[in-house]
Length: 143
Image 1 (tube, rainbow, N blue to C red):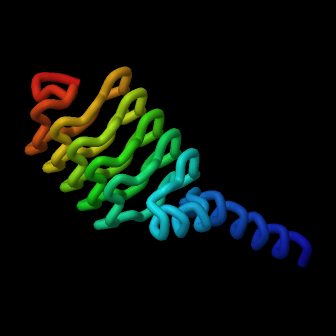
Image 2: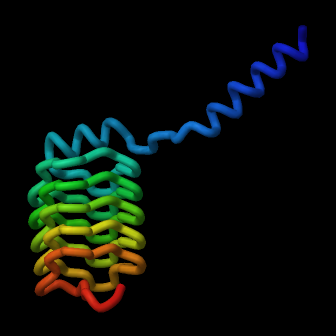
């Protein structure tokens, strides 16, 4: 009887570890969507698809793995933010500040990042297929 109970408990524990956990702070997501100001927030893994974040203050925010597909980030300040593995496919991010931002392995496919500031940004492994990058520090020829 105890062996069966132990086996069931171990199976549930293994399942809990196998299920992906959402890391974003729901309070931070709500604040961002309501005020467009969330400097230093934990938005890792957040779903912000098609979010209207024009001029948002996201300095030093953790957006690692966040889904910003088709989001409007025009004029946003993402200085020092962590956007590693984030999906910005189709995002409108012209005139954004990406200074010191970690964009490692971010997906910018089809995004508009024209006139973006990218001083000190980590652009390793980004996907810029079909992206508009004029006037930014992002080059089509390499990372």
